[in-house]
Amino acid sequence: MKRQKIVIALGGNAIQSGDASAKAQQMALEKTAEQLVGLVEAGNDIIISHGNGPQVGNILLQQKAADCEKNPAMPLDTCGAMSQGMIGYWLENAMDKALAKRKIEKEVVGIVTRVVVDENDPAFINPTKPIGPFYTKEEAEKMISETGASVKEDAGRGWRKVVPSPKPISIQEHRSINTLVEDGKIVISTGGGGIPVVVKDGELVGVEAVIDKDFASEKLAELVDADILLILTAVDNIYINYNKPNQQLLDKVGTSDLKGYAEEGQFAPGSMLPKVEAAIQFAESREGRTTIITSLDQVVAALEGKAGTRVSMEYNKMYSA
Ligand SMILES: Nc1ncnc2c1ncn2[C@@H]1O[C@H](COP(=O)(O)OP(=O)(O)O)[C@@H](O)[C@H]1O
Ligand SMILES: NC(=O)OP(=O)(O)O
Image (cartoon, rainbow, N blue to C red; front, side, top):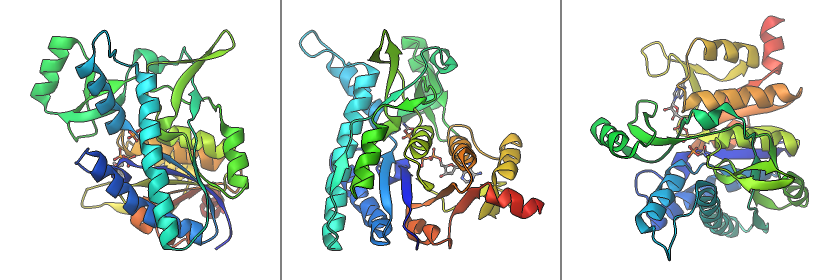
């Protein structure tokens, strides 16, 4: 396999599947790291990013539960930073352990990453990013009437608190991230989509938001000039007519066809749609760039072209030729 620079966006199931305890999440990340090390063993340079929706929502609830004069609740940008540090720390330990098992000597470095957004992004007046635990419809309605909270249905899975999710414009630490990866380090960065900041009077100021980690990973992949954006989630492939009797797996798809499928409404907003949009954006950002969407189990096979969905402009030409 040719050596490639890969930005990996880890989906929720790589960190947490039900049990939100530290132990369970650390164990999930150990399994995740075992798979990711396969990419390092094959000689690739990797930068790992990850989601934080469940974790940042839980941290926010913990803040509110403890809120008092001597122990004030922290704002959402700071909760995002906490989730980034927490998951980054677990991931560093998990990667170290998996590397040691395979006798690979590589340093793992976590970077606290700030992501610049636009303070006029329309997302600030239309919160859409689900965070924290799931609620029933009845619980959600009670929360809305009692607290005025923004709570919405999340892709058919239940009801969750929603917060603004502005689009990433730039990644403050991208040059240092690239220096580290070029120096052979495994870098963990842009966790939870990055800590959202806006530029005010020449300074970076945190804002109440959670950036989508697939969009932030895409931005990072462009900025570090990655070859591949690897989006890992719970399914092996993207499908059209997903979960219907005529479901069809996509293995290689051109960005033009994928845009068409998205316009048809093939991808659920809030779950597969942001991944598809990020996939198209990266694949179209420059000739030769590929996005792969697959599951953790298929990660090495997908890099070898034997699994997963590959998105590239190359396939537009192939099918229109
Ligand atoms: N057309 C589709 N093809 C594949 N998966 C889809 C599709 N539409 C919706 N999905 C769902 O989207 C999920 C991925 O979104 P989500 O769980 O939000 O991502 P994450 O892994 O980042 O937490 C898949 O596990 C699948 O259930
Ligand atoms: N920040 C973010 O996109 O997290 P999730 O992937 O967990 O929703």
